[in-house]
View: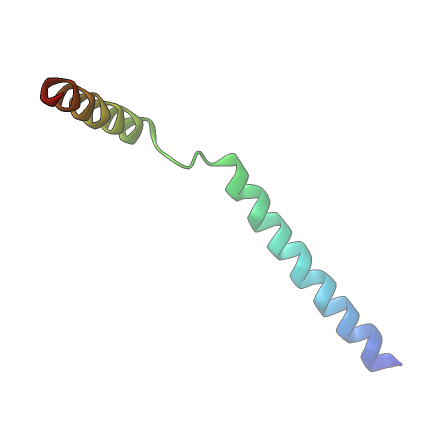
Length: 54
């Protein structure tokens, strides 16, 4: 019985650590602002090339 309580406590602590890590992931944007601008520029250039070739 004592082992079960200890194991349960360890597993609960590990889940709490994982949950707090995952929570911090949500706060961070997936793409930085400079990357967004670069992607928009690249897509804009591709759209122009596509329009010119059609």
